[in-house]
Image (tube, rainbow, N blue to C red; front, side, top):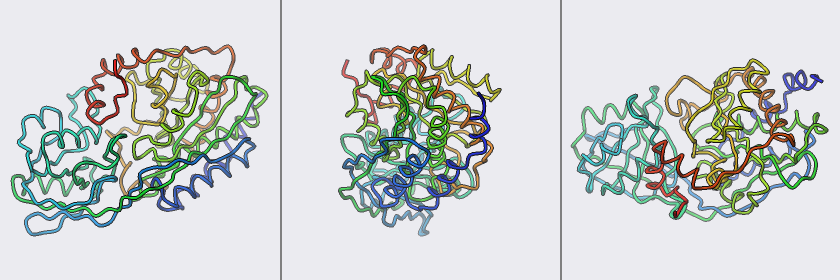
Length: 436
C-alpha cells in the first residue's frame, strides 16, 4: 500500500505550520512567541488526527536581551549579547585566542582580559568544540568578558546561550560578533583596551512541551521529537521550525497508517532547547526510561537534501536508518560519533536508544544557524517532502514489534563520549551527568 507516499509528498500541513512558526517572530524560550508557537503546533497535531494533544508547562530561568555594546579604538563595533549572559560592563585588554582550542586558552594570559574565540575549529582538530566550552575555558582562565566570533562571512554576529544547568546565568558578560568584526578586532585591537557591555533582564518564566499520540496503547513508546523555540534574532526556520514541521508531517502520515503501528508513538515538540535542552530534560526526568523504546529527534532536517543520522552508538538504529534510506533511494549518511547537543540527549545519556536526525549542508558548524540569516527563504520544500516520507517510514519501522534495540548502560555511553574526545568539554560546561 503506497497511497500514503503520494499523500505525504503532496501534503502541506507541515509546510504550512513552518510558515506560521517563522511568522510568529520571537520564539525565545519563555516568551509569548514561544507559547504561540507551541499552541500552533498543538493545534496542527490535533488537526492531522493525533490524540491526547496537550501542553505541559514548567518553570525556567527567563532572559530577555537589552542593548549590548562593544567599543574598540574609540569606535562602536556591531555585536549582540549571547543569551543568558549576565548584565555588566568590562573595559580590559582584548586577547584573541584564535579557534579557542583548549591549548589556545592554556597558552594565553587571560586574567582580567576580554577573550575572543572563533566559532569553528581547524580541519586538523578531531572534534567540534561547543560555544559554551570555549566560554567556560575563558571563565576558568580568569577572563572578565567573552567575545564569540563567527566564522561564517556575511556580517552575521552569532547568538547562542551560555550558562549551565546548575547556574543558568553565565559568569561573565558575553557577546557575539560577525566574522568581519572579529577579523577587524584581531587585526587592529588585539592587546588593546576594549569595552564590552551587556544589558539583560533576568526573570522567572514559563515554557512548555507539546505532546500528542497515535497508535495502540502499549507499555513502550516511540518518541518523535523536535523543538519549537528559537533564538530571538531571526525566524528560526532551519533551527528548528523545520524540525517541528517535520514532526507534524510525520504525524499526518502515521495517522493514515495507524493500523500499521504496533507500538504507541508519542510526538513531543519541546520548548527551551536553545538554552540548554531544558524542555527535554524536564520530560526525561518525568518519564520512565524503560517505557521509551526509541527516540527519533528532528533538529536541522530540511536544510539540505542528504539526511544525516546520529544513532549514538546503537548499531540497530544505524542499520535501520540505512535500510529505510535505501528503500527510497534517498541519500543518508551515518555519523559514527555521539551527538550530545540536542533533545534526544537527556534520554540517550542514560542508555535510551535515540537518533538525532539532521541534514547536510556542506558547511562547517551551524552555517546560517544562530544568526539573522536563519530564514524561511533558505529552505527547499522538496527536501521537506522527500525527508518526511523517509522519516515517517522510519518511525513506523521503529514501532514494529519485531524491531528490537536494547537499552545500553550509562557506563557504555560515557565510554563512547570519552572515546570521541567529548567528555572533557561536557565536564567543563556542566553537561557531564555521571558520577562513576
